Length: 111
Image (cartoon, rainbow, N blue to C red; front, top):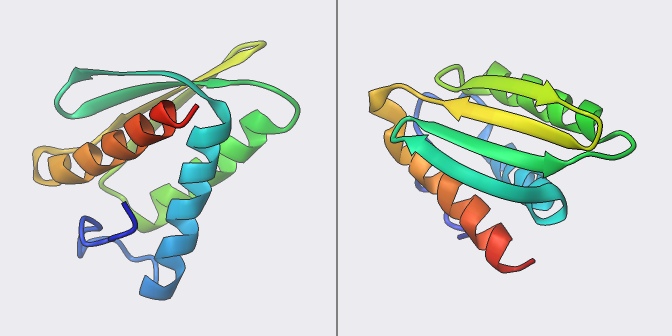
């Protein structure tokens, strides 16, 4: 899924930086994703394995993503060994969440 056509016009991250950001998310998913579910069409819940520095990594990525894609709402809950990341979007950005969910599914298949 290297095509970034799903990135909406409302994303303010410069185009040349987008593949790098997507790679950061993909690496996080490949390394840490333990489960995912889509309880509602506009909500994705991810569970990530914790570890040294993982919570800081997730929070940093969420903060930077919130800065360029204000249509995302993130909620992070960290436990001892698990980080839950909830992502929500409005109806207009459901396709973006669909694409992100597909990326997490691909990461889960490669584990």
